[in-house]
Length: 173
Image (tube, rainbow, N blue to C red; front, side, top):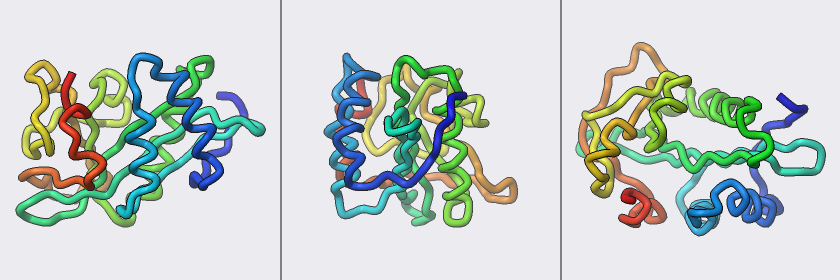
């Protein structure tokens, strides 16, 4: 992995993040979600990976809850690494740094993503918690969770997310 510092994202990181998401996801416009999450009233854990003066990675963890229990969990996403540095360990470093920061507050993290990629972090398909919006049947295995506390009891119900995540287009193809 190149020399990278993982740190809390700050206001001045917004413009470099715009370019990062454009470069990493040329066929998807994820920056409006990122901007809404970072500018919204709901708290998020937003981490950037910086190499020298360059922002090379980013991840957001959004605090959510599961109804009807009201148990707090986190939602991972989006996760982004500059194309030339993908597969260099930056995404993994961001996810692990997020887990380290979340562990004191949350015992479970959810993600809608590639099972092969997120499996390296011990994410497993989750059919106990429903997504906030319907997902395609083909994506069933992509809805996953990981426990940050081996003693925690798995939750069940429906994931309740901040408004920025309630766009059905984010949950469908």
